[in-house]
Length: 318
Image (cartoon, rainbow, N blue to C red):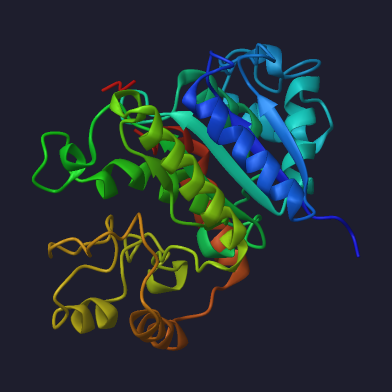
């Protein structure tokens, strides 16, 4: 049986930071489970964060109007991406599990990790016109966020000064990981370790170790599948009317992003659905519509060609 592989994409400048300790716990525990663990230490690698024409070997297709997404898609197809990107893509291909370990910066990932996302998860490699969200290229892989915050947990409650953490996580977990097809596991959040005594930090790390022991048996977070939407210009790429009508009787919206004007489903981006709710969601899927492959490709070609790099939006914490 082939050895399982896990990739940890790690971003912190200090080798003795709390995030470094969390990384080391993950490496130790996963190796004990038989994993081959690869760590991309982005700061130590001096990984280039900026997405530029230098990421392409040789001539670009349209030098008069350089469009990074389109040019890197062609470069990926022709084997002309820069060596550092290709090396990271090979790591992703090998991994069954990817963990992003970082301190929360400005309600998002550090710039160097955002650069990894922008450059490595290129069109063609990480998604295609036909393969996104639950139909995505990486639908057989699992990914998760593991991060520290400067603020306390109460500050990220729906009534906290920073707002609901579920809203903060939606762009990363839905707009990046789920967009590429990953089964997104609930994030592991280390709340304000900088203000905790050493005993509290140690307890946090032991909690992380315990979770890692059963991580791959966890259910992923729940997102609305593509089949819930009319993927046509006439339909506006919106939810099918019958499904919206059915949701009128529900107390909460479907997801953090697809709330339909209702209260957000509690903890949608930090906890998987309980079994009975998950089953109900599956029943909805059974009544969903199938895709026409050709129409799907044509529609999404025009959508993604011009909008893919405008989909994601992120106050910095320690």
